[in-house]
Length: 138
Image 1 (cartoon, rainbow, N blue to C red):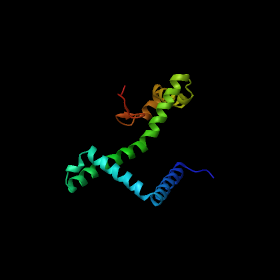
Image 2 (cartoon, rainbow, N blue to C red):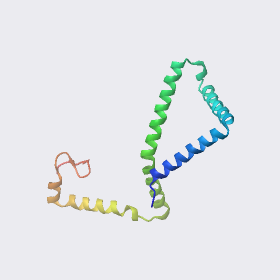
Image 3 (tube, rainbow, N blue to C red):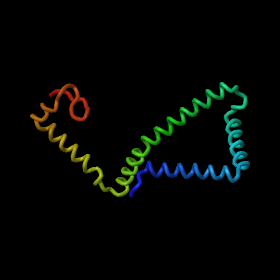
Image 4 (cartoon, one colour):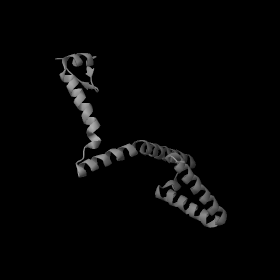
């Protein structure tokens, strides 16, 4: 049985949570001191210790919102962007355009359809034609 990436990430997250729970049960004082030290470093770094509790809540809420939006955007768009960059780097280093052959075939069929007069009149359906490019009437 093959596991998809969501299952693997869920298993890793549950394993990390279980490890944290075991560490808390075995060494409660050292883990608690480490967490208190990290909280203190966070408050000192961002000067939160001089704010009221309401101001801390507002600032922490904004920080959480921005970080969550950044993580969501990175998880949605970064893999595709990395894939595109990797394909471009492969093309630049190897010169092999096999990955670009489908795009070239689509461009050639569009070009031949535009050069053919009957296809051109069928393709024109308003100010936009083809793949969203503005085309002037001849």
